[in-house]
Image 1 (cartoon, rainbow, N blue to C red):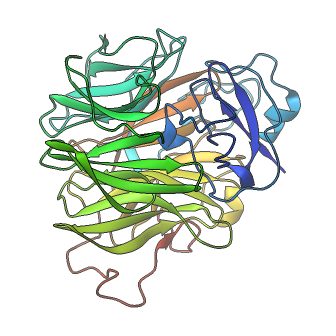
Image 2: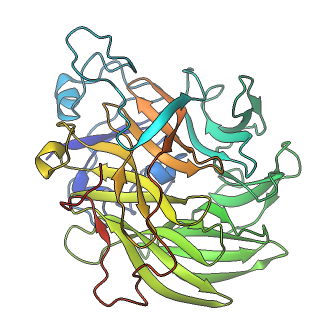
Length: 426
């Protein structure tokens, strides 16, 4: 079975696609960026682009160890062939490579590709943009083997480091004012949720349990956070809400991973594994009405892979996510203009009612952790052979979703959008 590399500064592990989450031994991920302990659950620094192609595991064990930061120089030809890569996979936006007929990046339903960080010795990932659309925060290993948080103006060049130390910080997200940042960190000895001022001052620990907690997302008013907790003993992933004025009280709202609070405050998007067949992750939403949690609704699914790490459009009418396809020959699935790429990862978007599914990226690189800015641009990390940087694109197809669109509460025959449907929008 084909094995997808998992990378970390100290560890490089190949894992079968059918065993992407083995909670007793490792966090299965596509791009782990921290040293892993195979006896404990250690989330990745870009865990949203990491855990979870499938919630089911085969008996196949991790098979290979090497190094990350940059892919190992000793990477075998067998592994490179299996991953659909070759020795020349740099980012060539204009197709200037002799012998290559395509480019590294193709926007099928988007325009205005922009690069926001440049290649460094480490990796830049987990981007987020403040509500004003002016400041970009992201995690990076550019100056350390540990991941720290950095700020830069969206249209600027200088980069400011706002966290430091021997710990790892990741998954930053601005609050509605742009003055506070929630993030996940292992600075307390375990992965927990923290909040810090945007200038790097006054870090506050919000959670403190024996289990890893990560992926914080603010409520629109900045008073609450939703986050996920992983329980390796019970093999369960759960969603929790905490009020920052009373962090001692936390409320369980359901099962899932990587939640994202909608801009309107009435829904939470998240990824959840199906309970049968492949058990690939798909995109779901919950309705939040006061203290009630209602109508778990599957919005989009992929029969040949996982849809993970959802993020909302500024108007709350669309959801973007990472599309992880375990089958290399996407062209055979009826997607015009696609080609055979083993284990591809792209950025997708779908309307809230499950219609209008689109693939926004395509190429030899892998694209992770989308975040939607108020100016309409989607920011994401691009992993290309020996570097990972932050880019953005702008979808040009508006949402078809309206308030009277079919939904789980108004139409009994409603179903989630599927990646390989014949009506897939280009």
